[in-house]
Image (tube, rainbow, N blue to C red; front, side):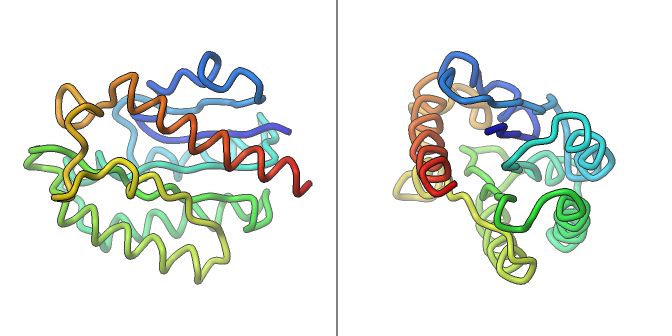
Length: 177
């Protein structure tokens, strides 16, 4: 089974070859990427790598670019529609955006609202939601202190948690196929 992760620096920094070496994972994370970048390359990436499942984590950099929640949602819909040209909806997972810690141009209030919109989008488009947010947010809604050094990017501990959650999901997918 081939799994593709696509996203920005958060995905790029996820060393799946070490943390999830038992799975065939293609990491297509690109530093600085945003929804427009994914939208422009999603079809090509799927055709090239032929994944059985796709996990998308993108959007945090869109906020830094000044894009509105509505604009990000429109781009996300286009990403999902393009992905559905190649994969059945139940094989596409939208990962909820992760919280930040004291990042002014990526506010958690907007991230929470975007995650609500992503959940609605997933339901409407009949794709799946993959929730890392609930495990990464502290009691105030910020990215947990020990999960970041700069308020945005993840520590090895955070990637360990992500890999554990993803491992459980992938094992369930394998047992159901």
